[in-house]
Image 1 (spheres, rainbow, N blue to C red):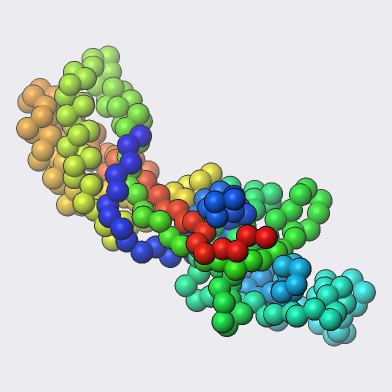
Image 2: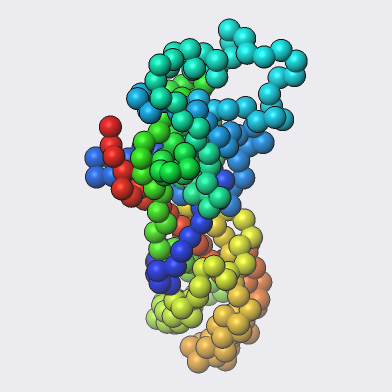
Length: 266
């Protein structure tokens, strides 16, 4: 695979979360893009400024009806454990920036989210040690900042697909190399924010799959006539037509990641 940097553009990370930072302040997880949070996922927390611990606040939809706090109420237990400490109300910010250490379907994935108390930005981390345990939350000052998005293509699968298209014959390697070089040149200047995202990679929260824009497909068809001999061109164009959509071998892979900035590590 080859990565191509389309330039420094802003990125918003939608609902999801990420790993705690290493000693350099960089998040070790990966950004989760366009992955919706679970309906029960909290959007506000209580946090102890002394201990750095936090507890999710139940939404009106998930709060039990009837009686108030009980001995098993995690919020009541948190307030009792941190009585006398300064407790802040933390809310998810409007520009949602969330990162994840692994697939969002994995209950063991560590999640992190940008929150604020109205004055300061914090990174709130939610994690668990085992599947039997509930998630634990902690927070510290910092921002989740977007890195530059990258667009790539899977050149290995693309080569394999062309080989299968011409089986039992093979295209000359020099022709395939030139074709991929031209393809790379065409996608190099694309703006990832203008691509039509079809779905996200279930196993990599940093990756979204986009269909090939029509103008790039048309340009690739035209440039192929300059690369391949007439006896091969019909099958090449057939291959391009059949693989131009998001489930085809010409699909674009958009990578978006984030890192921690201005964190006070504890």
